[in-house]
Length: 267
Image (cartoon, rainbow, N blue to C red):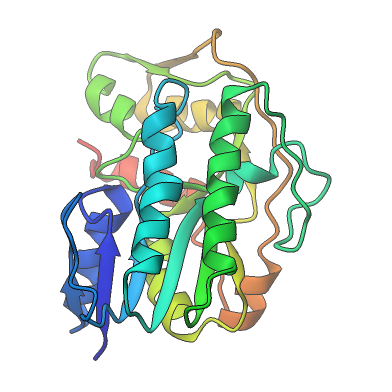
């Protein structure tokens, strides 16, 4: 069994990853925020989960830089590890003509999302250019889990009211990847990844309108959407690398969501 160190272990992904690793018999070290880690301690496989969620990034510029860049550099420069896996975001492909891992990324510095993407790319660059061993990046799409995320939360809170309001524009589409797939792949990438960058996504965009129809059918409720939220229709995320290297076949998101909602797991 291996040693894993999770930075950001109290967040959505870090917390669940820690539980999964321990269930597999691995030793898990969870440094607290601001904790000074012994520079002589071998951290094993580091998974860097620190970050500001997409819903918060418009107002938290200093926290974004600290989480995505400054603290990552602090850990890289003052730690001994066997591998370092930095969790980034597939949002960085917004507006790009292609979404494979070698795509050169262009940024719009005049937007809040451009600032967020730049901070993630700067964190990636720190990791990928570090002299330490086995430094890698995983670019995650929109991770969902029936029990605790922003996708299922409105359903959980409103399911008995006869009407569900979702915080997205009806015309928006997203690549949703199920948490179970993420928890399965992250340890494998950390220990055995042969490449430096991986897209971790389902490879399929689902529209909010499509999701609304599913919810209306399964729950027999009215579904409405946010008109204030801007429309986002990113290109499909390329997942050929994780599919070919690890035999990855993503869980069908619509089937998963329908099953969880029908069985009452979200309630």
